[in-house]
Length: 356
Image 1 (cartoon, rainbow, N blue to C red):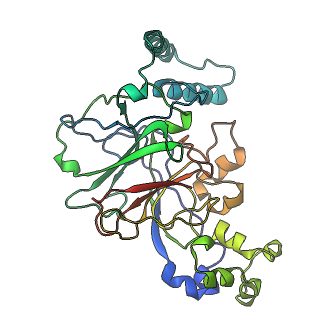
Image 2: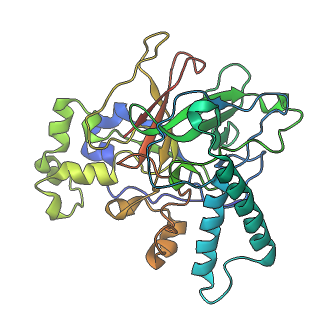
Image 3: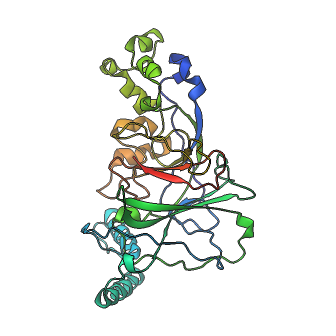
């Protein structure tokens, strides 16, 4: 299925008000994941990967924090639960599952009960299979700069909390799609997840190229003062609500700086802390944003970023857990973003990740 998403133009032309920011413009690609049924040949979030049948599936060998999160479900149970809620939302008086789906659910529940009776395979005792997070083809996301002849980026993670930030541990792979002859049909899945938000919902993508500017926290002290100077906004004739007169930087951050949601490149989102620079462990170059993993595509404070095609769904609203602003059902970090970084010198150098 081919679909598009279109970001509305910014309410103010950034460089018209602040020409000093022009050199800081960066290209980015909003991925716009939306629930569907991607195949291994598609760019996706949470979809199946074009993984060679003769290559071992990646597992997490680390020690796992098996603290009692109060959540103990397999990825299959998480997906079935979401499907049931969606069915009830669409048809409140109808069945949650078809007979075939109910039979599949009972079969999976029986298998899970057997595993529970046998005792849990504690993560510390054996490696945990990773879950697909994203698959991006360069043809869809040309902003990617893969090494060598690679044209495909694959990101996976372990759905358990890891020290020091209590978050999934990620793994990044670059490969050439043409080199994959036989595809692994049934990848292994972990026994359970620490959180339902660590099980991404399969979503095809609608990549859209945009231009981004840095969050005010990423600006120099001098430029931060410029953005926070209300008289500059007034002198440029910017049509900005006077309620922002005391804190104009809030309007800048919410409407003109970095876009929310899943994206490649651009500027990273910043949360409750000041920017924390990352440097390559191999060559010491400052790492640059590769992929932003987001819990939400937008929120009430950033309505201006909602694509035209999603505005009707935004207005309609949905029950908890079915919000159109959270299509991937991913939940990461206290400020809902995880940033993956790549070395600008060589994508083959180890990546880094950071919860915001």
